[in-house]
Length: 180
Image 1: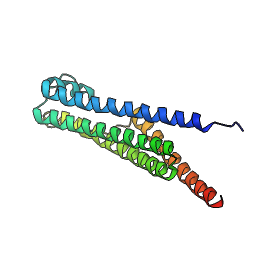
Image 2: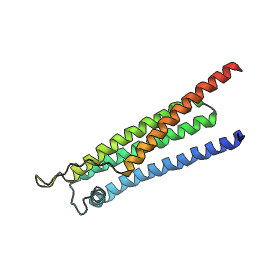
Image 3: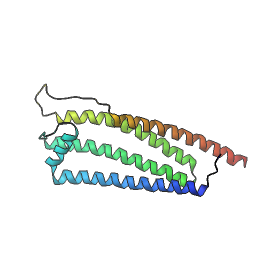
Image 4: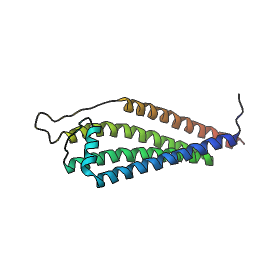
């Protein structure tokens, strides 16, 4: 078995925490950019969102644009929550608080599952919002499961296993401390 120096592990944990901080800042910047685009060019942002939902060149009403923007910002907020909780996992590991890291990892897993459910609902809702002003019989209601959803399922499963491994590791660490 290869011996790993604790300093090296702590350094890698620190780098991962700092990387997640950068990701969190990028997500926050993306949210600010979305809001700025919405305010600066509401119709342009509406065309962008309509195109993203598969309905290019649709002239959306203001309420539709705002509803789509809120749907997109909800997804952005969930991803920011995942980055925040992931930072907490590595912050706790950096401090040697394995139990807190396990709790944070469990939160990451639960938020990933919530993000998956929200994403499925939001994509269905987005198509319904975009086609709401269509004549009767042309409105769409679509439920989709794409590669992003499958990737989120895999990430949630990995996070679930990781949180369970950290819980078991914390229990072993506690037992080890009691023996010493």
